[in-house]
Image 1 (cartoon, rainbow, N blue to C red):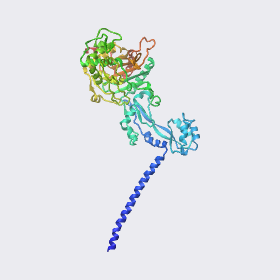
Image 2 (cartoon, rainbow, N blue to C red; image 1 turned 90 degrees about the vertical axis):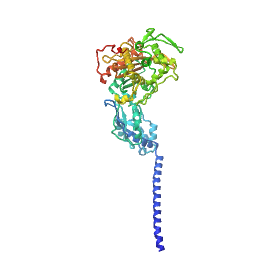
Image 3 (tube, rainbow, N blue to C red; image 1 turned 120 degrees about the vertical axis):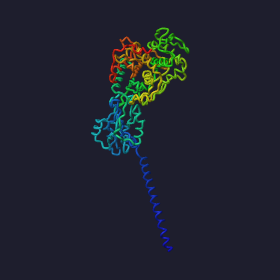
Length: 555
């Protein structure tokens, strides 16, 4: 009985030992596989590692970008990229020599190093044309192959380059709205290999490609006619904050962005800050009216005066005192400085802050500059800022703030994506009274009809606005013969729908025209030309026969 009892006890012990051996063997097997793969990766050629790193991203799809009417602004196309398998290359010298006969700019030394490295895979040239691919195939060199990748293509070339931005060699967004799209999660998903869909919904913009073409075309004309170093413009919907068109010249072709980083290719409309000159008098006048220190019938002392060791005076004095409309119409520096003085330094700074002129814009475009202002505002700063010197802001900031002066007093953040009026109102901040907005429309109308904005008039569309001619600061000093000019326009002025802001950098007088180089002679007519061509495309019907001074009854 004892022997039988001992044998039945031994069988469970034997089974436990067997299970333990199997478990240990499995663990050793798993770790052996992991170790083997780590050794393999450690010995892999660097180029081969790069190949694996970019494969998923270079094959991943990006969504098309379309304008508000569905016209394609950016899309993916398939291209062939050339690679080599050095282990299959018979003669690296002969292979490189043959490739140099059909491909431009072959780096003999680098390609020979790659093809004689003995690696399994090396990139040679990305994004070949179909003709180049056919020529390489015709060489019949063993060890060369092609991989189909996706390349971003912009049908309009430079049409909206500063807005659309760029992608890199691996089709990842690195600037403009291409970067914005990646930052919304597309890039992360592709990097993780989670997004390989080929049917991504297109991204629709607020841009109208037709208006964008007009803006860029007129800016090109202005560059040539006025021999300027740069020009820019934006068309902004005052009710929604939508950017309908925006261009800055010189620009670049995103299909061949070899010069995209050149200093003169800066997007001046959102990525550069400038002293905006007398366009700032629009905000000074609105401030004085909104705070109640003046009304539309007030007279203001416009005699020269001294402050902080400086004399505030006019270029062309129109009298010892002027009404508020006359200050605006004649663009009086002294009158504007007096208005700011009545409000006070703190109130002045607070008002410009409320209008967003001193803050970085919050919008989808990554390339947005932060305005600059004095570290400490003194009375002399307030005086000069009142007529546009001493604060540097972006032209887009200026257009957005001007929209609030025209739309009843609502500050609406700008957007490059479609937005309804209801959606805009949910984001809007009321920054001035409706009465002040009505008065500013009357003043824009007055200056457009009888002041410096006459050359921007377009029959049937009632264009009002304010010019700005600012001397540029170079090496810390104002230079009288170098100007940054602007025209800030709104139309139709009785019920504004759009702001058009045009800037012209360092324009020169047109020989034989009898005109100078101020904004009235270049920025204003350029704005008028844009409005004349774009207004019908924006669905605005011209109206004729209204009295010139219909708006001025408000005061």
